[in-house]
Length: 133
Image 1: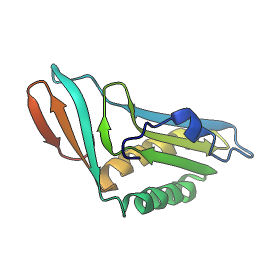
Image 2 (image 1 turned 45 degrees about the vertical axis):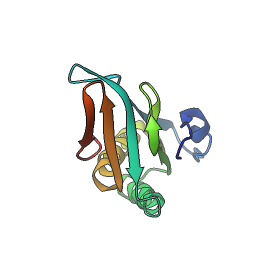
Image 3 (image 1 turned 180 degrees about the vertical axis):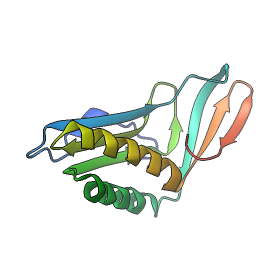
Image 4 (image 1 turned 45 degrees about the horizontal axis):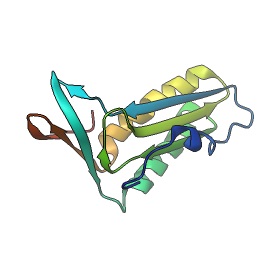
């Protein structure tokens, strides 16, 4: 999604909710402050050829592991400014408990497995962050 915005509501329209009683959503935003220092922007770099397959694999694994109906996920690359969405995950499930568990698991796994790298551009300089947390 280089240079584009991420629209969680439009992404939500892509999820299959047939037979579901809940949709659990996680939207990660860029913070404007980190450790008391102003964050001007984040820059995400990705292994573009691998990112879609990693997200798809995680979604399929979550469907099986948590008995949920469907998952829709997206993660931006490029420049993301404060208060803009970075990542969005929607989980449709028959019951909320499985939806919350799956959504929490998905963001943790995405942060540890997705081929993404993050640089914070701050008032005091630039910092490459390990992982995506």
